[in-house]
Length: 362
Image 1: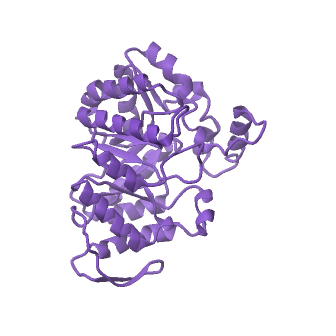
Image 2: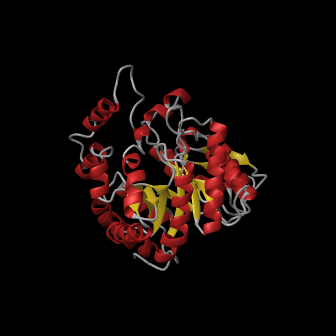
Image 3: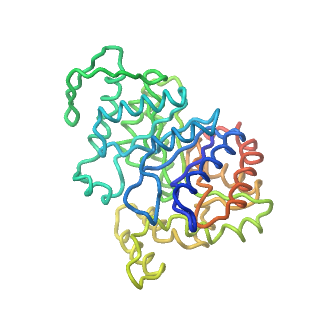
């Protein structure tokens, strides 16, 4: 198995953004020394009460200054928000700054509120994202200047002045549970993955199909399949639950819309849950409706909280049932104090990773 430090880079109580970024660098430096494989961040916009990361390139470049071994990158760039030519130039420079340590996540964007301020159509986001893969491969090809004439992206005779270190480009990721997108990932050699809101029991058949498609495509390596959720490790189960059980149930408060005057957290959670009633994916709807219930998320192992032995055991079982071999752990959540945060990361690196490193879920 492989392991990543994953971060929404949530705004933290009592911290300025500058202080929060410095805390992030301390997290990444610790993970780097402990042998974590990856560091990933999101790209979110326009919510000062939520994530403080709208520029994944700056995350990767900043992280590069505080790490030596970890591979870093976005999970992922919201492709439709960029001009494709500008994005390929940026990807190449980031990979050069990292000395070839960049990992490249691409996403169409999940939140409509990110699109309107840019004057873009949220309904038109998937096709440009998928086509960008071929655009990027043309841009980083041997023939320079390059041209591309696609349905969404068109460039005539552009010279890429700085190529990426990695050929033909950094390794690609695309977090998705959509069967059509998973087929695309298998055909193109792209690592997929999913978040805790999609139940592992529902994900497993789709990812087994993906593995069959990957093998049929003839790729010489196993794909990385990622799974992302909250994790907290402490010396004992009792201590871990005391510190993190309730906080884990507030880890994704940023999924809720901003509070209106007089609204309680419970009001916001109830309105959020109603949005998922009647949707086609019953399992995901149930998770989203109970995402802020500490008992539910712990009873269903939607988050991993406990001693190193407990977390390793639960994570191994989840990897087997959910068909993933790369764990993206969100260690910094809610108002978790830094002392507890760093102890959790250290215990995960020293005890959980060695217990699972040689395990191959598929």
